[in-house]
Image (cartoon, rainbow, N blue to C red; front, side, top):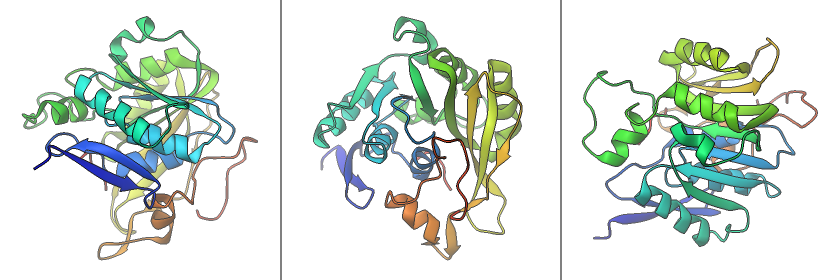
Length: 262
């Protein structure tokens, strides 16, 4: 049996190569890519890109943008590069192997318009540490915590640039506090609920480097309508047809408006 799988997303528009037994992306990555940024953004950084799924989706959703994925694990970075080539996106997506804690050695400051991140969210000693190295580093703050990713994002962003993250709702206070301490003012927030009456499981949030204090809380995103059937909005997101990102004018869209790491 092969040690890898070739998984399609966005209704077959993209294919992602993943290790069969290691870290595998889940719904939160797709939600973040749909949520992040404004229309018209050109240079995007995906911190901790893993197998490259967020970078690939962002490139598909934003045909004029150039995307860079940063991943510290050699095997995952290699798979991400192969996925980029498989989808014929080498002209707009590149993958760099490196550590967010050494970001100054890898990229010049203020060189991106948008930074996205699906960071590790389990603090050390908060339960059993996964023995698989890919899952351990992706899920647990053993090789860089939330503050490290936020500081890297602030370093990379131009003034007024945006950083978007997906994070467990249970750690929402930590997230908001650390963003403001880092100089990334929370500007737009959306809660994700498995079912309409269930507590929120995830936070989608976007902060601005040097932004003023004003937060827009968007309508909640509900994953399931009943049983295991996705809601209409979720189906549209999975197909790459419905975007939560705001127009370049800065006005929010009206109308159409769980998700753990696998």
